[in-house]
Image 1 (tube, rainbow, N blue to C red):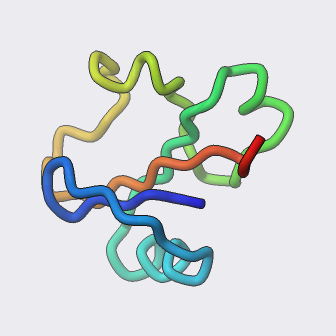
Image 2 (cartoon, rainbow, N blue to C red):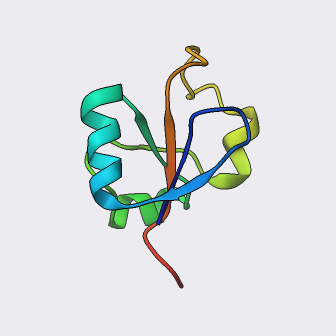
Length: 77
C-alpha cells in the first residue's frame, strides 16, 4: 500500500486508483522508501528513491510544503 499525507504527520493508506488521481490532479510526488538496490530492481515510473532511514534529512523532498507526498514500498514482505 501507499501512504499519502495532506497534513503534517497524518498518513492514510490509499489505493492504486487514488494514487493515480493524486498524481494527475494534485501533482503529488511518489517517494519509494526502500533501498537503492530495491528501487533499481522495481519501482513505479516517475517516483524518486529516498530510503526510509534518510527521509527526515533528505534534500530531495520538495521545498513546497503544500505538495502531497506519497510514500510507498513494493508490498508486504
